[in-house]
Image (cartoon, rainbow, N blue to C red; front, side):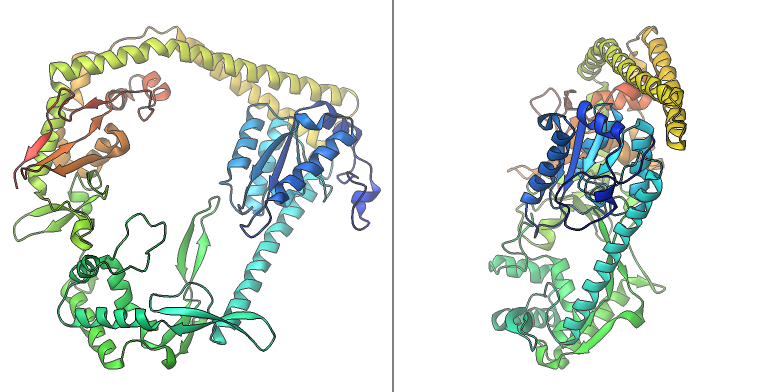
Length: 594
């Protein structure tokens, strides 16, 4: 489209800019007035005012009204307290989905940094919008991605948005570094310490670190218990029995109470010896997500400060505990490497969970056998499930139970009945998909006609020509997919034979021995919520129970032969009722003696 990439959208801009000088492109104004407008609004922090979303939406509606459109028809896609450095934002995802489905003709936002503050993500969004023929308009920065210089200005603004985040992060880190060197708190503190608000020499409110006397007594007790021969789990259980509040007490953490890992972390924490470190690690965001992962900094970047006034554990006790920890670690290492149990050898690891607390059962070693136990009960004592189950007995009986349930006359009949219901609905679902794709093709062809008319009127800008090529390629792909689906709809649907149903289960035990990792993943796909629950009955007998998903089993065996089953069937969908092997549903639970 011709025209400048900056334009006037408000009469109250605070300072003169190119956005105040250039009028809005008439074609863009027409599209805003007559098209389907999507408005993206976002603020990035819990500390910001939620009314910011309302302000952004109001300004966008004013822009729509100013060009003669109906502001009430503008669809708002908001994101609350989410960073622009991630693509995992519900509002943005809904907006892009609406664009892909042809439900949005133009997007308005306060400025393009609201869309993204990551150059890579911004480039990906630009390509998706360009392919769909949907312009993005920044109301305050005057950017129009459909303009002749739209790509250049959009890329430059995206680069500046990312640079701003980098600068903000660096300034924040410098400020925290200064506070750490001055002895002030820079974040969360370990159990045993507290903060006190004070005013520094510049009149700012800062937080000094101080020892919490009551918690310090408990810290020293934990160190003493370990030196006296108590294990990590024994210390955790003792504190839980005494109802001593844990460091996570009062938080939203699901499993309250002391645990072995908490005790271990405390015994290794040098702050109790008066050694405080800053900048040991940084949290790096995984590209395209809201997830962060820790990454160790270079040793020369770490700041170490000796704070003897904050020592909680006496040097003699600290040194003795460190020596014992080192000896214990050496005992469980081999050739300098940590001896770790190979979870891959146990097919039910990650599949079996405690019915009481929902924790995954953990394999522990014995003198001759491995045993499944509830990790919460063993390490914390807060779960009443004290069962102990031999790994080989659990594996043999549970796999046999699943095999018998599926290969019984009742099991086979149930599977065939559910598959028949799936095939009955298949043609209906296929017709709906074909209809939806034909509607998208019509909308794409209409956009192609619009671009052809622009070219006929003399508009042969690179953006128009490139958009036309992309739309034509998309239309070609859509036609090919429609042809494939129509061909599939003419293929006869066949109910699987009994042999096909039983093929995947009759040798389950043998495959579990040959490839436990693959069999474990298979069992997780076969079961609702990917787990088998284990409980201990009042008579002391342990039983396992779970819900099998018959369509998951069959789709796995037919993936290579019947693409319709795997493509259009969703084994995890709640639409599929499960074949249960718990007592009362036709199949007895597996039981094994202690």
